[in-house]
Image 1 (cartoon, rainbow, N blue to C red):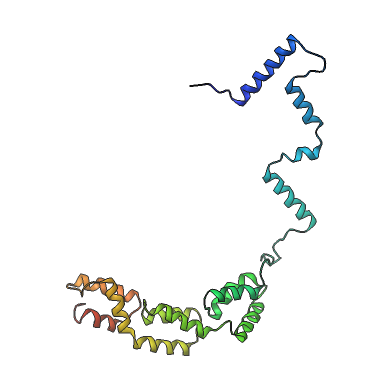
Image 2 (cartoon, rainbow, N blue to C red):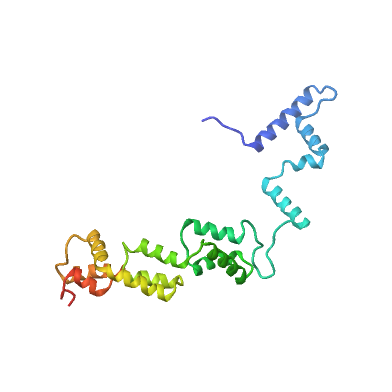
Length: 229
């Protein structure tokens, strides 16, 4: 294995060789390389030395200069971050372009970027007037996405959590109940091969369908009567 000197030992070796060379013959004007480097560093202007600063130190100095000049953003008195980026309405349109939202859901998302609740309400009113925002359309979209996998009870609970009007919730619940058995049967077929043949299997399949929000009377029709006793 070959030996490689460390940086410190290499510097000492170069200094020793410089001393030996100087002892043998020292022409006029010749200096050791270590002395030459020290002289160059001492004579270098302050601005040139700054270019060798670490990037983190340079960034810290830049932030300090911006703060002194008053250009750095700081939180307001109420603790909220100063507004930065898209306007409140543009943020709302961005959310709505991805999927439908209920008014209450969108209001919660925008609250972090608004000065107060009145500003959010003004934006939501404008979006409803322009047709961008519709809680009724959101409710229909949610039912369409969930109906093939969940029962009426679970879907209705989610609609209420999003602030959908009670009258519309009741209307959608009736529609879901009309197709509850067929939807539950399809969900059951995708999970199980056959009806339960003992109490343990019955309980397992019943819990699965109930966790999806399907009604108990529908579960009994699918799994058979009397097996739950």
